[in-house]
Image (cartoon, rainbow, N blue to C red):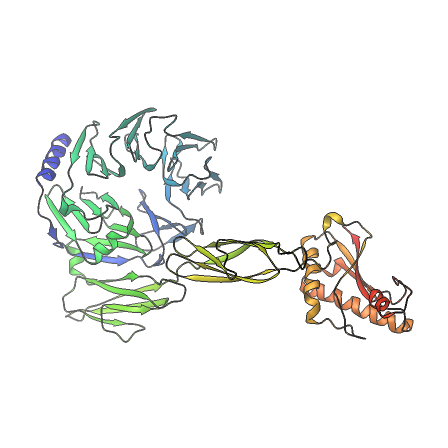
Length: 587
């Protein structure tokens, strides 16, 4: 019986049919538990009808009604998810496999490899990547690697790995597919790019760069010619529901029912989602779920029941391009009910279906049909992921006349490739061979969004000897350039830079204890010198403590004029004797 069906299916596609456009009402509803700017790389619906979303901001677990929502591996870009036979959860990021239950992670042996797909198969996690296939032993935690040099693979670019119900593993590549059965690998169709697969009772369906074909349970191949009315542009994904109907997401959305010999094209709103689809999935109720590349997550409901209901969903037609700009666009997508419809938006005095020039924020719309039936939907327009710049290296100059300072920054976020430009004209993330001073780096993404950061290249060190490798207990160092006004112990802004150098040293070496010692010149009386030097030492110590150094690590003492460096009373000698020193007590 299956063989007969497949033959008829092939003949049907071969002769072609006229597609029917929008013959069935389609209700689109955005899943508002998921941010509208998130990318849903993969949608998996398990045997309990739980939805797993692999996104650019972690793995989400939810149900169709949004009754529960759990997040895992937040901050990681997750590309796929699978459960093993003991219900342990495994997820993949760009280069790492995670066991969510144990918290362990396993980085691929090739750091440059990019994961495309994972599958659990006979006690192992099979990983498809652009550097071949990696197989992770769930018990050993060790990888085996397969590529064009040591296996039957003709291409190291793996598009998917899929284990079917009969324990056959299918590996789709840029040069054919591999069928793995009882450890035996067999390469087929090596002249085609095997892009995606889906399984139903008829067998294993494949989309290629040229057409479509079916491998039945008896491992027989039946070509399926795709006609012009079944897709437009690039095919993004396809899925099959419980009744055998095939949904193809390209620049248009097509539903094909081979039993009824019916092709339906869905344009406008459905086509917009289909065009940006990264993933398709079908739940146990035959709802179709579309995960997009930055416009949210949506449910498509087909059928007469949906046609009788008034449904509204807000589509994010254009996201905010840059942080806090006002250029987003929303559209209220309505199905069911009875026309004409009227629209009322919550935060805009508009009765149109489309709103433009919108900033980030929450928006809702109420739609009313001819018979005063209403439906409401809401959406949050999210800011795009901002461009964030971090300083990962900062090299101060070694002398006032040497241009040998530098810095290196790293930016993340934004969209697409990031470009770096420094205020002195340097391009790229690194700044080299510059004088001390403040330099501004501007990072721009592919949309023209920008972020800036001021990077200070510090002057040469005030206290060159203040290096942990050069110090010994009992050693005393003068704090150069720490100058006080005459007869004053007040710390002024001119002292901040040198004191910051002392603070940074103490903050980086928490085992060091010091004494701050104050000294004066030899001319005033002892009582005056003792008080002034003590006040200066105390104020320096209190400055460091207020900045965050523990008081248990800092002592202070005024030595007055009892430890002069010279007995001379010349102006030069007085400057030399007036000083504040650091003594290393413990390290």
